[in-house]
Image (cartoon, rainbow, N blue to C red; front, side):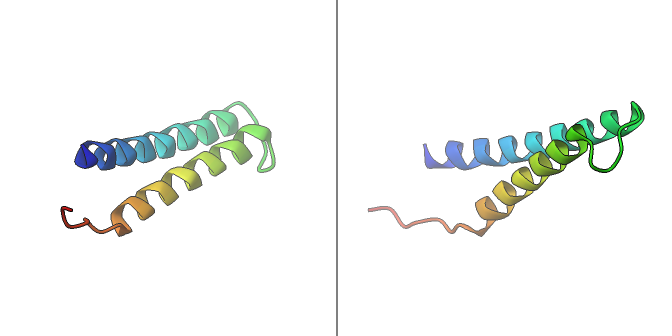
Length: 65
């Protein structure tokens, strides 16, 4: 069960990165500047996803109780 949780955390982190980057790209393509709402929110989503991935890789497996 814990393995499935870790995998879903990694998948969600990767999806957040992809959605964040797509938001930035679409916002810039539609003429948004560097402080446009889409750029800021997209960068934040990508950072949150990267943080989730980094933290999920840093955790070690606990021995069975």
